[in-house]
Amino acid sequence: MESESKKLRRGSLKEVSFREMWQKYGTVGILAVLVIALAILKPASIFSATSISQILTQSSVNILLAVGEFFAILIAGIDLSVGSIAALTGMLTAKLMVGGVPPLTAIFLGILIGAALGFVNGFLVNKTGLHPFIITLGTQAIYRGITLITSGARSVFGFPISFTKGISSSIFGVPVPVIIAISVAVILTFFTKKTVAGRNIYAIGGNKDAAWYSGINVKLHTMMVFIISGICAGIAGIVLIGRVGAAEPGAATGFETYAIAAAIIGGTSFFGGKGKVFGVVIGGLIIGIINYGMTALTVPSSYQQIVMGGLIILSVTLDRFIATKK
Image (tube, rainbow, N blue to C red; front, side, top):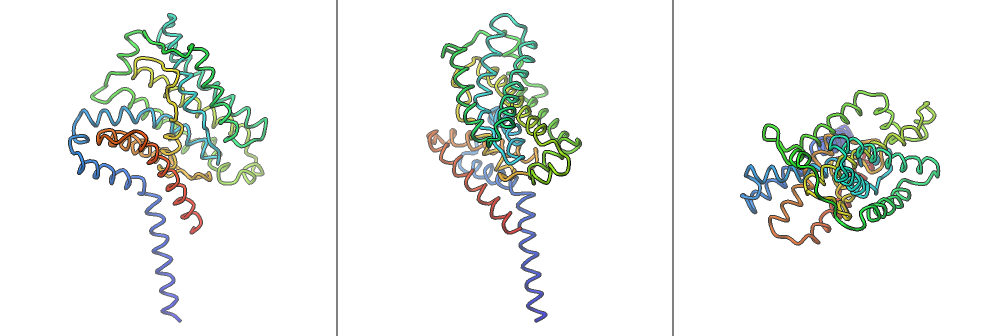
C-alpha cells in the first residue's frame, strides 16, 4: 500500500513538472526548434546579418499587433479588427502627411485614431453586452470599408523622406521598427506587472463575476483593453506604411490571424487570465520565422495559412489539455 502511494506521488510530480516546464519554456523551445530546423534546411537563410535583420523587421508588425491582441484575449475576449485598424490608421496617417501635415504630428494623430477605433470596439462591447468576437467581426468589415472609401481603393504614397528614412533606418544596428516593437512591449510589461489596472485585467480574465464582486470596474477595464489593442494596431499600421513606402487599402489583411497565433503560441490562454507580454513577443518572432523560412524555402504562401491555422488549433488544444489536467 505504501509503495503504491509513492508511485502515485511520483506520477503527480512528473505531471506537475511537465506542465510547469511547458508553461515556462514551451514557447522558447518552439522558437529554438524552428531556428535549428531552418538552419539545417537552409543555413544561409538564417545565419547572416541581413536575414536576421529581415526576420526581426518583418516580425515587428506581428509583435505590435500581437501584444495588443494579448490584452483582448487576456479578458477571455478577442479583437478581430486589429488588421483593419492597422490599415485604416496607416491610410489616414499617410493622407495627413501627403496633405502637408508634419510627420511627427501625423504619427501622433495616427496613434490617436487607433485609440479612437479601439474605444469604439470597447464601447460597443460594453453597451451591447455581446461577445467581442461579434463586435470586432463587424468593426473589422466597417474599418476596412472606411479604408477603401477614404483611399478611393487606391494606394497613397509620396511621404516625406524624413518619415520613410526614419522607419527604414537602424540605431546601433537595430532596425527602428524592432526598437518601436520592443519599446511598446516593455511599456506593456510594466503595465501588466506594476499597475493595479494591469492586475485587474488578469482578474477579469480569470473570473469576471468574481472580479465584479471584488469591486473591479469591469466595463472600464474592458474599454481600456480595447483602447490598448487599438493603439498597438495603430502603431503597427504606421510602421507598416513606413516599411513599404505606401499605404495600401488592402494592407494587413489577415494579420489578425498572425496576431492571435502569436498570442496563443506565446502562452496566452484563450480562456483568459493567463499570459505574459514576453511570451507574446517570442510568439511574434515564431510567426516571423515561419513566414520568412517558408518564403526562403520557396513554399507557396497558401501553405503558410495552413500552418498558421494548424498552430492555433494545436496551441489552444494544448492549453485546454494542460488546464484540464491542472
